[in-house]
Structure formats: structure tokens, C-alpha cells
Image (tube, rainbow, N blue to C red; front, side):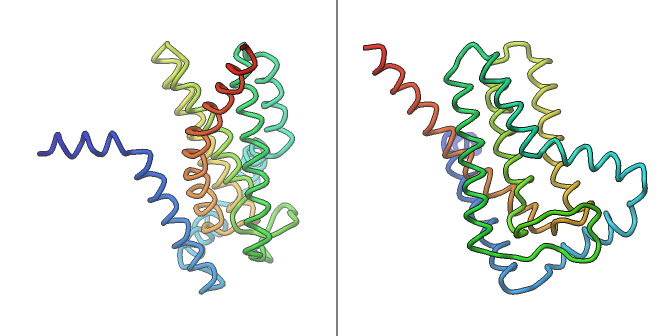
Length: 218
């Protein structure tokens, strides 16, 4: 019985993760509309801003947050496009970055949550929910995790890269709260909607590019 349940979960894991991520996102969004600040926004603020802020950590967090900036992600995307032999992967990475950026902008314009006020270390414009850095980093580096897992044969190298990129995604999200430009709910919401998006992207876009490539070769 247990094996049967495990087999069902493994078979439909992407669908389950998609819907769970989507449900969590909408639950957070519901709370964002109901309350100005959610209880775990205050918990994160008290822990990261009140208790942990210091000059050294601020320098580190500013560096980490820049790894989720548009300039860095566009640069990585261009380098991947130039140096990766399989151009379909390079195109997928670029399309992914453009799509998730557009979706984030649309969501922000629809929701229009103001940014935290009064304790920001850096200046950011635009709306707060969902966090652009968190959402885009999850989609961008998340796709790199997927591609690394699928294509790197060396197990140690594969595991090292995947763990590094996953840790980087989490740290970028934390940096946005620490620097005072996002609430924790902005970051968590950004992560989960991005996971749902990434599952759809991985299922559709690479297959679509393969079909287009095959048709061009005929």
C-alpha cells in the first residue's frame, strides 16, 4: 500500500507541487489583501532587521541581493547563450528570464502593495508583492538547477551546483527582507508562484523549442 502511494506521488509529483505552490501563493495573497502586515512579516523583521543588522552583514547582503538583479541575470543569460553548445537551452534560459520578469511586473501592477517604509537600507521603486528578486531568482536559478540535474553526469559536481544555487535563491530572498525593501510575505509569495510557473515552463517551452527545431530541419 505504501509503495503504491509512493508510486502515485512520484508519477504526479509535478502536478501536486504545482497546485500546492499555487494554493500557498493565493493564501498569502489573501492575507496580503486582508492585513497590511502579516504576523510572520513582523517575525522576520524582528529577527533580521532588529537583531541581525550590522555593518559587515549589510555589505554581504548587498552583494547577495545584487546576484538577483537584472544586470547580473541578463549577463549570466547571455554567457549561457554564447557558451552552451545546445542553443535550445540558451534560448530557454533567455525566454524564461523574459517571461518571469513580465509576469512579476503584471502581478505587481494588479496587486499594488506598497513597499515597507522606514527601515530600508537601499532604495527601490515600484510595488512590493511579489518580490521581483525572489520570484525571478527562483525561476532563473531554479531552471539552472533543473538543467544541471538533467545534464551533468558527475554526481558530486551536480549535487554541489544544485545545493549552491538553491542556497543562493534562499539567501537572495532573505537579503530583500534584511535590506528592508520587502516583507517576508513578498518573498515567500514570490518563491511559490515562481515554483508553479517553473513547472509549467519546464513542461512546455523546451518541448516547443524542440518541435520548432525539428520542423526547421525538415
